[in-house]
Length: 291
Ligand code: URA
Image (cartoon, rainbow, N blue to C red):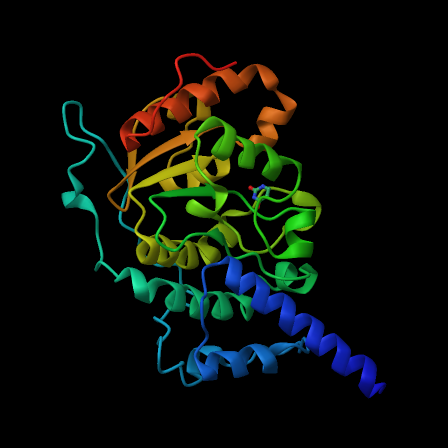
């Protein structure tokens, strides 16, 4: 074995993982977590028993089901006349903002070890956990990483990602760093095919925990896969957009996926209407007219 090349590879992979954790909101790592990152670099065919490893003491990882899809709280539509801001339905404990970065970093480490979908785990360059602020008011949820995301470990950085960034910054007047961006799947499906129901169910506990930790005030589902998965429906996006839903009690909208908008520019008008509805609910200034 060429030990110098192997050492270089380990250092490169460790730095990439740490950068990705930083983007996911980690501001520091418990020592044990750092050792996990450093120890993880060589890809073994057999998974390491992370679920049984001693969790980092500073930020213990919450148990995430390894194989069994969890029973999820059913999404509820916002009742006509009901208040969008009545958050009595928001489940789970409120996690202190200062605890969120560490919990997300621990979860990201756990996800990086995941091999619940062996073909996806074998094909991925790296897992793609999230980007943005652990205390974001708004969470965007897309489908799955594409080629550039698989290479960089950051969600929505390819052509669709650039459009999403424009929607956030130029459309909504927010900074990309101020929202939280995640996907249904943390691994890239081969040839960017749609996630299978089994893959979505395997990955769902991670997203569910991200929602629980970040506890956003609003969620925006991007595209049919995210909308159908989280709203547990087979309805088309044109039936789901333009109105409010709830996911885990959080007021939620669904709109067109940026990839679809790149292929179908005529749908941008509807997507802009959806974003305006979101902005009004968030109390953000909405420009009078926007082309
Ligand atoms: N499409 C998605 O749904 N997610 C990404 O991260 C990139 C493209």
